[in-house]
Length: 95
Image 1: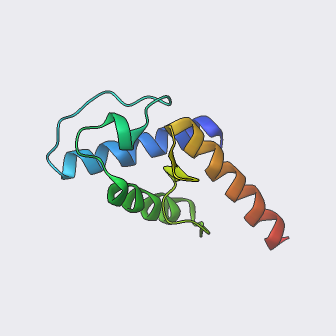
Image 2: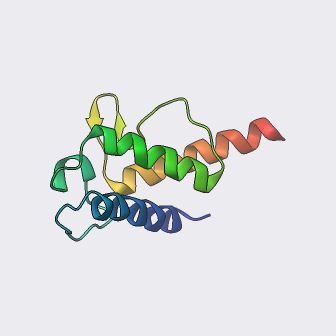
């Protein structure tokens, strides 16, 4: 899976959570920081997104929120890079 594909997956998941919550729809791009830029989107939604993306990609993480690292909120693009790193690490441990 490419970084762009992971970004699109994260965007789909984040937008889906916004829609399910009945919150305002806003444009989400790779530069969007969901926890800061989306109305009502909070760290709990980030945990939900992490669970959903983990299920979709068949990954397990050593963190509980893909949208936060070192107490800093991440953009979709930064989160996708983080997921790519996880995918690479898990594929090397499975070899």
